[in-house]
Image (cartoon, rainbow, N blue to C red; front, side, top):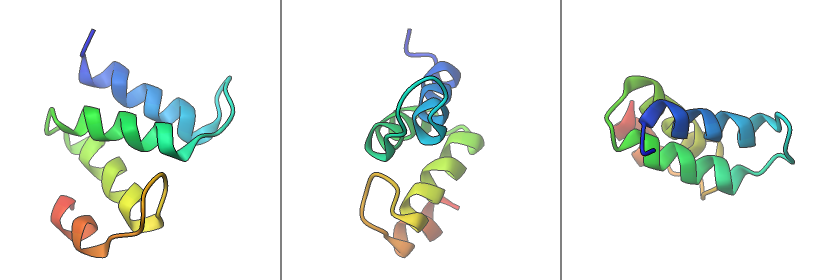
Length: 67
């Protein structure tokens, strides 16, 4: 419950479609929640979403900030 690693892993599941249909918006949502822990792993995944426009509009300024 609210453990960043579990939330992060849900993002990975939706990003890659492991057992579910791929859903960039859900992946972005979970990575955003997990990144609130300031975990470098989740921050990096969230930066990737902003860079590639996965589940959100591409935002290179936000990408640079998160990296």
